[in-house]
Amino acid sequence: MKKIVILISGRGSNMEAIVRAGFPAEIVAVISNRADAAGLRFAAQAGIATRVVDERTFPAREAFEDALADAMEKCSPDLVALAGFMRVLGAGFVRRYSGRMINIHPSLLPAFPGLHTHRRALQEGVKLHGCTVHFVTPEVDHGPIIIQAAVPVRAGDSEAALAARVLQQEHRVYPRAIRWFVEDRLVVENGLVRVNAAGANQSVLAEND
Ligand code: GRF
Image (tube, rainbow, N blue to C red; front, side, top):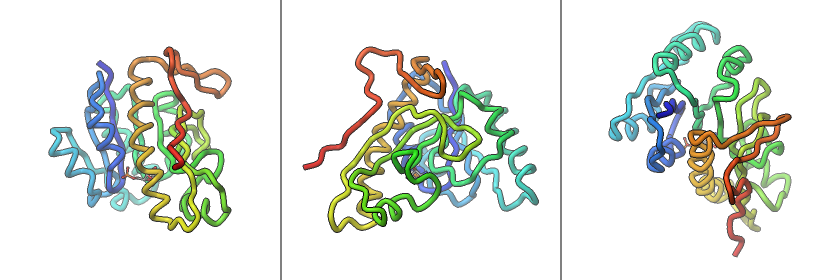
């Protein structure tokens, strides 16, 4: 059975969606870089081992990443899932987990990498927004795309309303991507991801009316 480690920084609703999805895999630990991450409570209540590697207690990024890698290695993960993990990881760290670390980002990449994606989408007037699950590569928010979900942007949308609409889809597609991974169905060729499963849908369109 494959082992999954989930990294969070806050609320942890994606982690919760992954846990609730119930895979043929073992979620061996939920690790946070912040002691006050609300999601830790849910994980502990679900009987999952939790760990805090508090970034503020380390003098430099290297020391933090060494401690994080140490905590992760103790779990021997087959897959590391970043779920609202709000910390950019260095290239060395990322390469070490190449092909077995994935992330969810709240935009239709390559549009709007980085922060404040919903605000920027509204400012640009895009009519479709969404989320992306992708393999993590050293270039932030740029790795091979596993699945995307698109939602309509509605006239008069607030940042919060749009974020909530996207989050609903995040909770749909992240568990799906992880299932494909644990079932060994993801094939990456020339930076493109295909799913080796009949009828697999890598492009989700949320209803528009
Ligand atoms: C999500 O929108 C995720 O895409 C982004 O940060 C948010 C985290 O939410 N990276 P949660 O902690 O999973 O509830």
